[in-house]
Length: 141
Image (cartoon, rainbow, N blue to C red; front, side, top):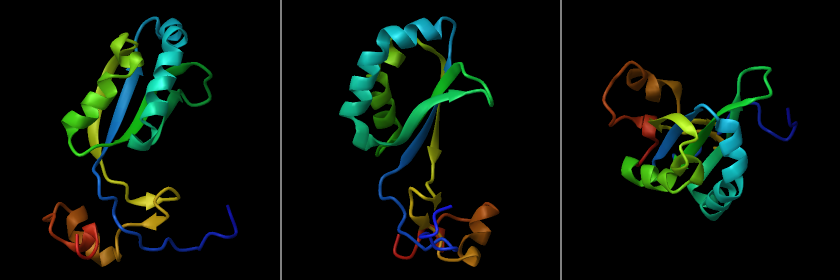
């Protein structure tokens, strides 16, 4: 680990834009389609790079072959996330056998620069299914 990082994650503000996890699983013939549509796919993700927290291909643990892709997309709505993804040549060519969308909360990590909760007590009842109007969204949210 980087010695310059604090041992405890600092509190950071929650991202203002919703995030969607997009899980894409490769279909038959995906390798050939990836090669054929790579330039268009890269052009699309590079043109929209500010809309992704991160994105990339996935493999089975220890494997070399690509089996899908994962995207963390910033979008105001699920429809906006779908529109962004529908313009990706990897999707329009039918490379993926399935595409799954989930709303995702960026809560802790290096990208975030810390954690979004102010204290464990602030999120305890939300973690158990409590109401969303608690401090787990950060003070003033």
